[in-house]
Image 1 (cartoon, rainbow, N blue to C red):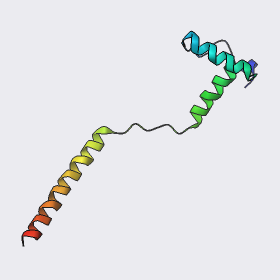
Image 2 (cartoon, one colour):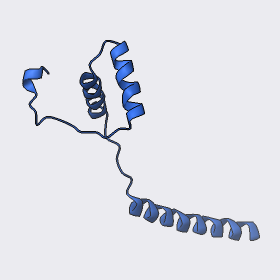
Image 3 (cartoon, rainbow, N blue to C red):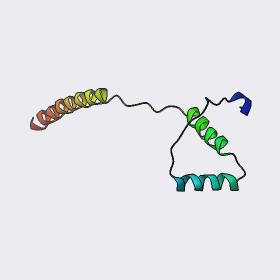
Image 4 (cartoon, helix red, strand yellow):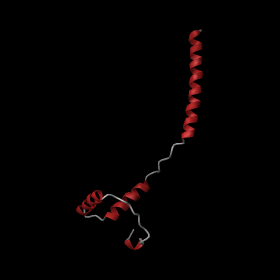
Length: 84
């Protein structure tokens, strides 16, 4: 993406403490890189990853309760067979 493709509206403002910003800028400068390009590459890498799905806690709870009932039935069957 060239600078011509970006407009002034295509900005992402991030608040960062001065010490962290200074350290970041020093490293970027030492590596001969552009800070915006480094951050843009991080954003692109992030977007390239598969999004993590949020677990459906209600479904997990329902599955857990179902499994608890199955275990109780199996324990009951084992207890009855052991007694026989």
